[in-house]
Each structure stands twice: as C-alpha cells, then as structure tokens.
Image 1 (cartoon, rainbow, N blue to C red):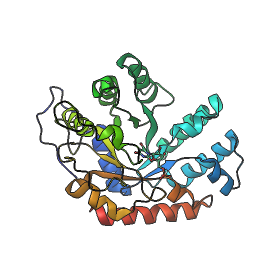
Image 2: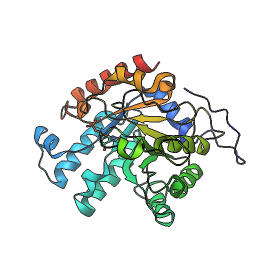
Image 3: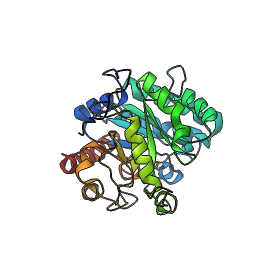
Length: 290
Ligand SMILES: O=C(O)c1cc(=O)[nH]c(=O)n1[C@@H]1O[C@H](COP(=O)(O)O)[C@@H](O)[C@H]1O
C-alpha cells in the first residue's frame, strides 16, 4: 500500500476518510470488488426473467452471497436505470442492504458534466441524505478534471470516495486518453497528476481513485504519484488475468483493487458457488498484489 507524503492539506483528514476505510476493508476481506451487472444473458442463465423482478432477484442474491465477505460491491447503474423508477428503487435497496452487511458500495455511474450539474450528482451519490448514497462512485474527467471538484469536495466532507476514469479497459479509450495535451503530457497523465494533487496529505491513500484497466498492458504512464487506489476492471470476461496486474501497475500494484463482474457472476445463482468464485478470485489477486 503506497503512502502519500505530499504536502498536508489545511484540514487534516479524519481516520475515517474513504482511503482508510477501503484499506481496512481490503485488509479484512481481501482485494476484490465484484460488479453487480445484471446483463440480460446472465438473467437468462440464472433462470430469471428480463424484468425488474429478475434484476431484483439477481442483485439481492449477490448481496446475500457476497456482501458479508467481499470488500467492495459495484452495482452497474445502467442495468437498474433501464427499468426506470422501479429499477432505481431496487438499486436503493441493494445499496442499503449491502452496506448493512459490511461491503463498501461503489456506484458505477461514470458521471461527468459542467461543475454546477456535477454538484447535483454529488448530492445524489455521495451525500448521506440521498437514498442512492454509497461509499464511492465512478466519474468521467473528460469535461475537464476541474469540473469534478464538487464530487471531490462532497466525497472528502463525508468520508466517501470518487474513482476517476484514467486509462479505461476498452479498446476505444486511447483515442482520447493517449492524446497529447499542450504541455506534452497525455490527457490520461494530466488526470493522474490531478488526482495526485487531490490526494495530498492522506494516508495510506486518499479518497480519489483512478480507473486503469487490467487490459491496457504497460501503460507508459507514471502511476507512482497518484496517492489513491486504482480500480482495475477488465479481468476475466474482457481477457485480462491476475498476472496482467503486475505488468500494468508494476510497483504501484499494492494500491490496486481488482474488479470482476461476469467472471464471478457466471457462477450463480447458487450462493455457495458464487462465494467460491469470489474467494478464488480474491486469492489469485492477493498472490499477485502482495
Ligand atoms: O468503471 C468501471 O468499472 C469500468 C471501467 C473500465 O474501464 N472498464 C470497465 O469494464 N468498467 C466496468 O466494469 C465492469 C466490467 O464487467 P466485466 O467485464 O463483466 O468484468 C462493467 O460494469 C464496466 O462498466
């Protein structure tokens, strides 16, 4: 786990900031985030209908199987949103029940907009008064990193976190992320450096994480000054394996939170099979990240 030695901020972070909570969860439960992605094909495979009832059964089975043992659960909001208000109501229940069982909830919503609208997203996903509030959310910095300031401020004020897209797992990502900015850095490097500044003074790492796909190979980017956790999707269904984490992250790998969805979800709907799949994945990742 990396320690950020950059200048301390004026207000000292509490010990219950998101980076500290995540570090404790990973220590206690292992380095694993499991995505709750109720794909239509998975609903079929689980013998469920492609309806909001099917989504609810799917998601609550995962909460029953995993919320008391994995560090982080990551509901993919799109699969809930497609069912309108009833889907969102299911998401609210999942968030509440999973957190009550001890899992951290990372809302995968990938939001980004002008700052004044981002402020509303902060209220929706990071403020404790909202029924959709989890422990962290994903965000897109491609309207400019500064536009995410309201998310970062709200996260810090409430002990929550933000994972900002850096080098994503999809093949289209480099078109934007590898573009070179006026100062010679890639766009992704400017994001990584801005995240490092936002995390200054926090230990063992700060509340602002970066998403770097396990599929991206040697990044050619400096990951050493981020000072926050890395979320690594792309494992399993998208082709990357545990060993790729060594290639992608090098010495920064102790701060990596590997994330899998379909690879674990295919083991359902049997609860004990889901638990075994998650436990195998956590063991594989622990061996590489230690
Ligand atoms: O932010 C994410 O979680 C994410 C970023 C990224 O670069 N790539 C990526 O696949 N994801 C998400 O991670 C999950 C991957 O699912 P699987 O490919 O089934 O493991 C999906 O919910 C994606 O939306």
